Image 1: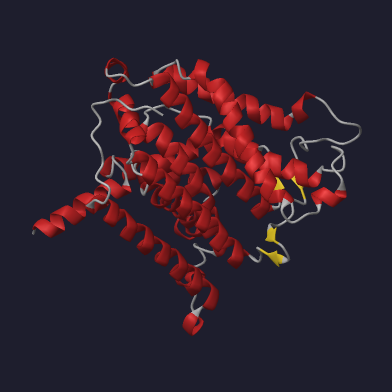
Image 2: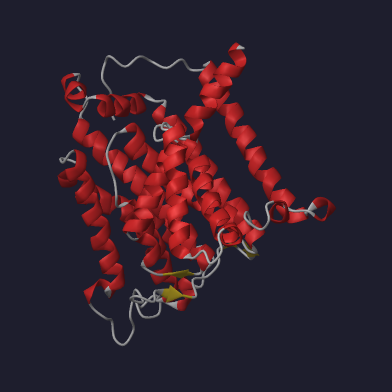
Length: 369
């Protein structure tokens, strides 16, 4: 990947890189600490009890999975400035590739000797990423020629098409079996394992999911601080100016779309093996919109904002689900949606650049005092 001559070389070892290393180590330690507190429950208290049942291993696993998706979305929207309202479709591609080829292997003519191997689901995860990246590459060139709300509408249409394909069984049935499961989806997706070591119960899966999320964060940080990352920011700032300075904007946009799609597909496969079931619902427009909200709450142009944005949105939603009824009598789903929307509006009013940007500002003020 070429970069313009105006981009300055990054020092091999800088204070920023050391800060990143410390941040990764500290965040990894925090993840392990939270997992151990929930698992060991010292003194009889675990995270779930301390939070009144709001934060459980299930919640933390979902935060880890969606963090991987939002990191990729941040690269696309926050750094390259390309709007996407169909990111959940790539999330779904990974989930469905893993689900179809593990639960429908016999229908597709895949022998049990192959499908029952422990490494088969891992191979499918890689295959799902390749397929999602291929789809993104094929549609990226024509779609990314659009700008603004036209691009948003095109990505929205792409997401709708892919979900319909899932729901309508690719448009045909193979024998008497429905390959995608239609509206009901697929069930019986196997758990992941390494050899004879099962990555389940959920305590084990928690560490796997967060290992993937942290590796994804590290890779994204390396990308945004490389010459390519600086070219992406130049593309975001002014596409015409970036082209006049020698940046191949079309190629950069397609590549970052492919990368973000592969992030989403990886997370989708982890989601399928976590839920042991898939259906079209979690991959539709509402899911894509929620991913954008998570990215915005955490901070669009911040890789570190992804886990905080996802956690903020999911925890707020769980709080409303578990406690709104005790505050407002007869509160139902509609009241929860209204309250959720109001809280998001307040967050964006007081933290328009995201949680991470506000924390950085608060830290700078505290140091200057």
